[in-house]
Structures are given as structure tokens and as C-alpha cells.
Image (cartoon, each protein chain N blue to C red):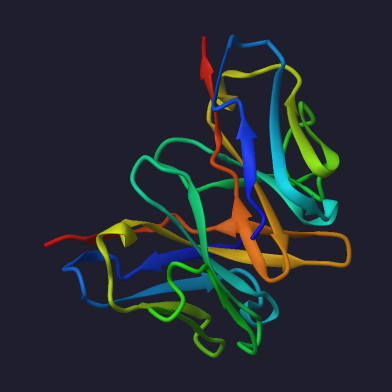
Length: 108
Length: 121
């Protein structure tokens, strides 16, 4: 099973700042099968980015994804108040799906 | 629009059973695989199981294999999760989610709002 490790655990930033979230895999992941989800308190997760740089429908262009192999990054160029949430990376490989443990982006 | 609505959660004693349902609408249910993902209170997301669009393949995470069974009824647009031999560590919100698999990508693009399962004596 591929383990995804996200860092940092918590990111404390102010609105307007840039957020950079990391997701590292224990072994190489197909870029096509790496995605990012956003979850706000009391809500279901929402698909943000897939494959690993395509934005899902309705996702603003301040969100971007990149990476390959074992290292992937989610970047939020300028944080809006509604972006403070928990973000999870997720991969599929060899009939197994795993999530990272999440990065919480909180208001500083 | 795509809608996924889970039901069937509740409180059950350790060793008990529960069946969750996920009613799908707004898309052709039989064309997509479907997942169950869970989230323990205050914790992160954990993938639980997937079933292929035609039910031909099913995969489970290690901790539920042999205890949980995923199934679907395409005539009723409904996904199920039969949970047996429940443990306290199965306490979580259970989400169903739609699988999208193309030549270039795979993702869970729509999620339900979840149903809470509490395993407690």
C-alpha cells in the first residue's frame, strides 16, 4: 500500500498570502491518479485538483497542482477567506486507494 | 445535478451489523464505479471500498476485508455497504462517492453528505 505523507500538518497564514502544501508518496505514483480534496467543517470533501494539475469544475484558478513521481504540491496563490479548510491528497494504484492525513490551513 | 444521499447510520453495539445505503440521482448510475470513504471523529479520510460499475470487481481496505461487503443495485440506483462484526474503531461518518476513471485520470468527483455510524456499548 502506498502511504501519502502531507506537510505541514497545519499552515497558519493570512488572507492574501500564498499557501504551499506538500504530499509525498512512499513509492512512485502515477500522476494521472493523484488528486486533491478540500474539506470544510461539517461538510463532505470536494474535489479540487486531479491528474495532478487539472482543476475540477468550478474551482478558481488560484488553486494549482503540480508534481510527479513521489512529490506533489497544491498551491493556493492568494488565500481567500473561504479557502481556510483541510486539504487531502489522494492516490489510486494497484487496486488500492489511499489518502494523506491532511493539511489544515488556518487563519493566522 | 449529481446527488448522492446516504442513509442507514446509527448506534450499534460492538459485534453488531448495519447496512448503509447511498441513493444516486442526476447521472447514469450504471456507468460509474462507486466508493465508500469514512472519517472517524476529528480524524482524516480513510478509503473503505470500491465496486466497479457492473459489480464485477470489489476491493476493500485491509481493516474491513471479510467484515464489510460493498454491493449495488443498478436498477434502483443504489449503493450499499453491509457492515458486520462492527468494532468501536469503525465509528465514523461514512461517505459514498462517485468514481470517475478516464484514460488520463481517476478521481472521486461527487460525494454525499455522509451518515454517522457509532459503535458503542
